Length: 92
Image (cartoon, rainbow, N blue to C red; front, side):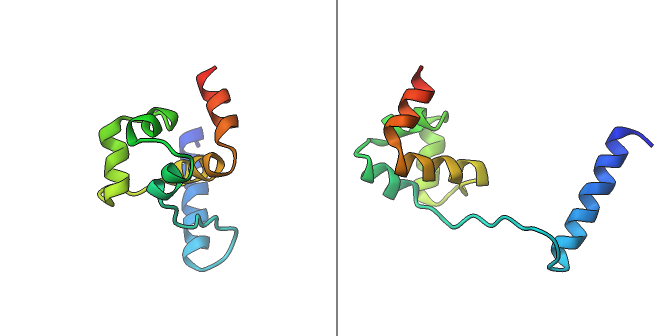
């Protein structure tokens, strides 16, 4: 079998286990981008590039027209706790 085939079989097995309530599942608590942004005193135009996204995409998060993905939610949590560290790391 190919590597792709092996990966698909593994993924389907994990999905089935998750559907049965078995195995590890990582659930991200909902996070409000606007709340994080206001907490660190940034405008939408300043926050969007910090997250590596367009201003229009960021606005859709705040308007509830686009869901925040797992990795983005994790980054928002880090920004909320350590905004200066994130700025230093991402602005080089």
